[in-house]
Length: 139
Image 1 (cartoon, one colour):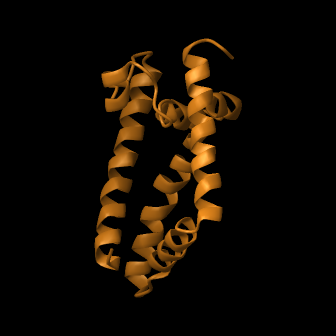
Image 2: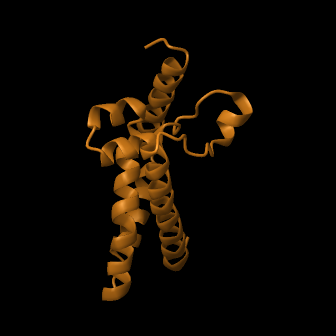
């Protein structure tokens, strides 16, 4: 992926993520359920590893970190990515740098190594098992 493609996609999805967070925040503030976008859950009826992430992000914004962690630990990663990456890219573009792109390439190289990939996938699997356990009221 070229730097231009990465920056375009990251800015687009970062902005979309920020809009989605504001939308969900306002819906949940009014005690309304936000629109469910999880295709996996719609098809199978089961939560995917990322289900509950938006609720987690809203809980973080309310300062309720314990609730956020129980809803989905990926909310902490998501809020950091949505909050930091778009501004990092804009700074790179304004200053003529490509530090975000180099970080992306380095991260991609690391995740291609089995000793990094398997623990990462194992963590996602653990989160999914936790979500399934909560779904079936095992925890």
